[in-house]
Length: 360
Image (cartoon, rainbow, N blue to C red; front, side):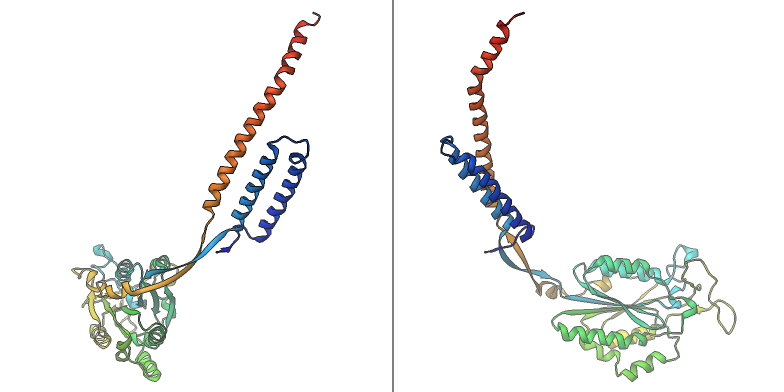
């Protein structure tokens, strides 16, 4: 057992001084030689009450360590937000009540989040560069906020991109995670249309870094590659960051609205290299989200243990003692008040009689 003051030692010591001073003053009156026979009992009762209150403030407690089951699943989301992901071929496009590919991405991200409420999430955003915008966290509110704020990159800043641009960063993140906790399960979800517009710059950077999708298969336990877009493709509007509706991005060769067509072969190749499933998503007759969220991680979910240390206060028995002493003190004060009234009643009656028999 140890003492952990409820309000800190300075306040506890201040209360001790106040209690000692109050008892000293009380002793002068109650313990005087001519005092009432019951006064000594009253003083010791108040000593006991003061001691109990000080002990409660001192916080007698026991350190407690608990092992709590937690999820050992880590989910890595690689989200393509290049301009082509704003192509309007999701669920028939805006004219048919649909939207852009990013609308589909938001819905699927929410489904992944809801399927693993106890997992840890990390998000890598992919546009002209790859950036880890959310480190591993169990804060699903942070994940929800990121999903809600997801927008395509600003068109004027676009320098082309490809899935390989995310490969070096993803490899670094997964390798570090595997070294830190090899027993954890790592699920990777890549959400993209697979279209490469960087003239091979991303692939060259990955090759220079000495990483490939095949190498990552050893540290990936599941997940899926989710592709977006239809065979006929769709046009996309420019984006300046303000949210105002802009013109369609033009094809530099024709001057007409450019059409983005998903590279399903690239998406399939990445999925095969990682050893995970590939599903093409168009917003029409898609497979249910359980097709990519129903991963076999039950064993991992039950294996995690997190040790939590906290202090368990043992003040409630002292509280019962204090309550008993307060009830005793209250009863004693009531008896004393009645005794005083009995002693003063003859004098009060005599005074009333004198007033009644006096001159009119």
